[in-house]
Length: 555
Image (tube, rainbow, N blue to C red; front, side, top):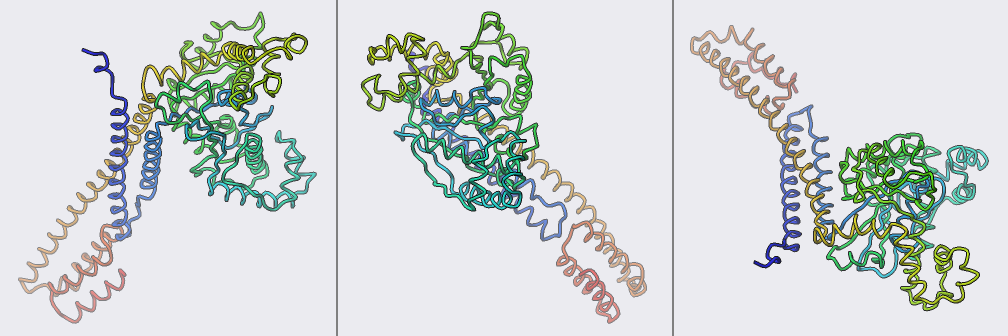
């Protein structure tokens, strides 16, 4: 038998996943419709125990399922990158992308998560901002402008500097302008960086000066940069994987632990972690045994609650800073295992130098643009200095050709550790072991399975409440039938006037008042039963008058 016959049909698996997720979404939508009808009946019956919270939670899960369905249709794999301050997260993403897309600086840069999507459909980088996000950013700019005018420049700079934001030029710009213009699409790397800096600085200042950012908790779309697949990911481009998305997140410590900025980012970040198949934690090699690693430990714990430890990979950056007495690779693996509980394996933990990788990938990106001479390239100087050392300017800079620089780029790329990281963590699992990104699809199915189980639990809970209500109502109806039977006997014996004018009428009124208080019947039901009661007992003026009074009282 041919081995090919034993191989899974990747297209069929992909379509099956789509069918399963679609079915889950449809069932949840039908169940939610039932709960809405139940809630409507409760409203008609003046019910106090409404289902708004349950319905809202299920609707959010349905939205999440549909979003995952679209990702599976696009054959998209999402990886989220998490790091403490200055660990090199932006440099790592830029190195993978092959160009400087994300801004970086020594203090915290990223406030709002940003998605970098590698796609076959684009030939140059493009930043896409959702219209709703642009509107909200304009609104908070105006609010911040008014707040800064009240505070004044000097006091504003003082407060911002105290909160690790020493940028008077940014504060002055917002202070002097009541509005800001933003485009839904921005092209060219420099313009993309400038726009992302402006967005993140604006939100950071909102947190510092207490400008409301509640909208962030329900934000549906984050900034999205679309870029072509770079050379180093060419295997993925031809694998059948539709898109690869990297998500740059803010420092999780500030999101979950430090409430001083109060930016309502927990839901936004959790959504990105939920959507990711792989979480990449970046550690600074020079800070492994410092307080920074303690903060990372709390971040790992938070992510493990959402995605589990098995989805976490660790990148040890700045490995080019290793000195003779520093930890060896084996000791680093042991440290990661003991500190974070992540398996001490070179398939989960990678030592890298993002700066070296960036030298090579940036060179390749410029080369792709058609430059034929190293001496005419902006990127060759950094690459040549890294590869040739001190001899670069003296001996090689004016002599090397493209073949020399190609070899230099390849060697530096391999030395950076990125070749091993991309091959083992991304390319091999997606291309070789599991075609069409089935790792991502399995993650989506598992996540939707958990949400479906939660949905079923909610339905069972409501079913149990309804069954208890029905049982109690049956008991009360049976009691009512007994009371009516007694009335009938009294009526047959012509002794009804005595009882109706006294205790039985009061008993009737008290009984239905109790039902009203318990929200078991509506006033409409009560009115109907009261009229039937009148017809049953007779047409005496006094009785009708009493019942009319009781009806008005209950209304």
